Length: 503
Ligand code: AMP
Ligand code: MG
Image (cartoon, rainbow, N blue to C red):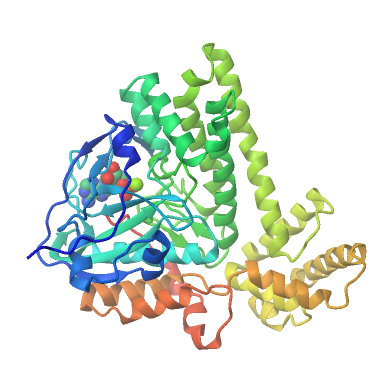
C-alpha cells in the first residue's frame, strides 16, 4: 500500500545554497511513535495540507519515521560560547532541519525535528529528548507567542515509545520546531573558527536575503546586518524583561539571527520580583540571571561582530571601530525599547521626560524588590489602581508605606499627561484597559508547569498539560474560572525550584 503523500511544499534554500554548512543525515527510526500534541492552528498558518491524515500518520511523519516528500534532512553546523567559554564545535547534535516552507503570510519558516537521534555533532550525547522537556518547550513557547513575543513554536510532539536515560529513565519524545530560521550567532562563529571569511560572507549574504532583504541595496550591508540583529535583540530582550522571562542559557548558539526566542531549556518565568533571579541548575554563577540578560545580549552581539570584522573593512582598526559603535549603541537601543514598554505598562501614552519616567519605573521595581512582590500580579493590579481600586494591589505590599507615596507620584504623572491631552472624561478606564492589554494576567506559573509535565511524564496523563496550554493562550484576559493557573507558586515551591537543560 502506498503511504499518503503529505502536503508539505518544501523549498529548501539552506540545503541548496549553503552546501558545506551542514551534513545530510537521516532521523533514527523510533519504535512506537504516538502523537501527543499537534498544533492545528500553527499547521494552518503554515499552509500544511495535512487534513486527511490520521494521528498515526502525523506521528509517523513528525517522528521522522516517514519523511514527507521534499524533505531534505540536514544537521546544521554551529559553534558557540557556552557560559562564556568557546566551544568550536556544537551543531545539531539531536536535531535535524527537514526543510523550509512558505507560510500563508509569505514568510519562510524552518521545520525541524528535535530529539531525532544521533548525528555527527552529537559528541557524547544520545541525540534524544525526553517527553517532559519537549512539552515544556510547547507550553513556554506557545505562552510567549500568546504574549506577543517573537519565538520559535512547536508544531508537534510525538512520544517515541522508547526510554531515554538521564538521572532517571524517562519517556522519549520528538518535538517538531518551527523557526524563522535556525541561524544563530553560533552559526557565524563556526565558519569564523573553521572556515574562511568567504564562508562567513556567504552566510551573511544568506541571512540578509532571508531576514533583512532591505539591506541588500545598501552599501554597508554587513554592518547593517549587525545593526539589524542588534536591533531585534534589543527589542526581544526588552520584551522578555517586561514579562519576567528568564531564558536561562543565553549561550551564543541560543541567540537567533532573526531575533526569535529560541531553545527553551532551563527557562522560567520569574514570580517574586528579583533582578538576581536564576533557576537553572547549571547556572551556578548567575551569569544568565534575569537582570543580566540585556548585558549578556550585548556580549553575544560582540561575538557576532567579531565574526563579521573582515567583511566590514579591509582595515582591521576601522572594522573594529565600526563594530564597536554598534555594540556600544545596543545599550541605548535596549533602553529605548525598555522605556517604551515601561510606559505602556504604566499606562502612559506620552513621553514627557525620559529620565523622570525611568526613575518612576525604577522606584516601582525597587518597591517590588523590597518585598519580593509577584511581578505579574503587581503590574496587573496596578491597572485596577488606574481605575481607583487599589485594594488588590495593596494586599501585595503589606505594611509598605512607600507604595502610597509611589502611587501618588504615578497618578501625578498620569494627570500631567491627561491634561496635556485635554483630559478625556474616561481617561481612567481607557488607561486601565490599555494596561491590561500589555500586563498579562496569566503567565506559565512554575508549579503549574511542573505539575502538568509530571502528570504527562510519570502517568501518561495529558489532561493537565492540555488544560494549562489552553489557559496560556489568552494571557491578557482575566478569567476567574482560570484563577488556578494565575496564582503564584508558593514560596516553599519557589525556594527549591530548579530548571534543567533537559539534554
Ligand atoms: P543546548 O544546551 O540545547 O543549546 O545544546 C547545546 C549543544 O548540545 C547542541 O550542539 C546540541 O545539539 C547538543 N545536545 C544537547 N543535548 C544533546 C543530546 N541529548 N544528544 C546530543 N547532543 C545534544
Ligand atoms: Mg541550543
